[in-house]
View 1 (cartoon, one colour):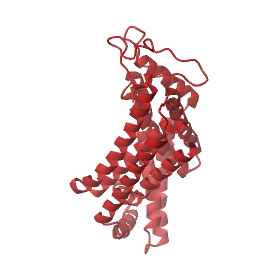
View 2 (cartoon, rainbow, N blue to C red; view 1 turned 45 degrees about the vertical axis):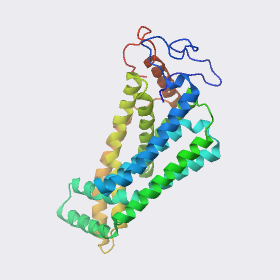
View 3 (cartoon, rainbow, N blue to C red; view 1 turned 90 degrees about the horizontal axis):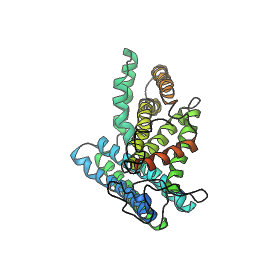
View 4 (cartoon, rainbow, N blue to C red; view 1 turned 30 degrees about the vertical axis):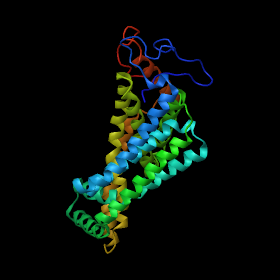
Length: 333
């Protein structure tokens, strides 16, 4: 799944670091699956299958670790699978692309309730609350504990999610053509970045868009991680830039979830008490969202096409011979 510059259907073909007929290249040149569209296709399928396997492994993890850890591992694996899907989306028929995407979404959503039950207590515990709000929070958590699914039920949910992921790996294998060129992969990155960038702007007015921003950003980071693991320091630098930004979104997203969690499990609690607790959550949430948007401003300033060109250039330079200008890392557009 090593990604290097490749031809686009309508533009000139970027120069390879060695003659195209010499697939191995000279000694010292880092070879890449990007130089062989069939190999690139196989590498991306393998990455999707690895994510599906991670979802299966999460079922056993529930016995060795804990239900929250197993659910987190499964949801993370399903997010990685969706990130890979984004990289090959342009090579898939629209119907198959939509079907795989929907199945992955449903698999993750089936685990959302368990995830919320594990994150809410930790998030509320970290908040600075007055005595009245702390008492209200504890009552909410007590109500929620009664609704927490049993371990056997969580295992079943994990198994169903893993089965869906495995089925989508087979569907992807059948639907994807024999070749996946670099232009398809680069376009996939550009598309997800564009979605994340649009969501980041809309997040000024909407908590829902803020959550969407983080989802797309996580997928973008996973895509860049996949590319960078077989490219070099320039791609790693781009990955690290966006990964660091995505990390700042997490605490705010957890609070968005807790805000709804309080409303869902507020039965038997006075509306005034619930309202006061939610006001306390909103105060902190507004601060975190504002801080996150400020921290991410530079990372999401460039237009999607510019990021795509930067990634293509960086991969090509990462994989070029050592004496072909392969110098300092491209850490800026």
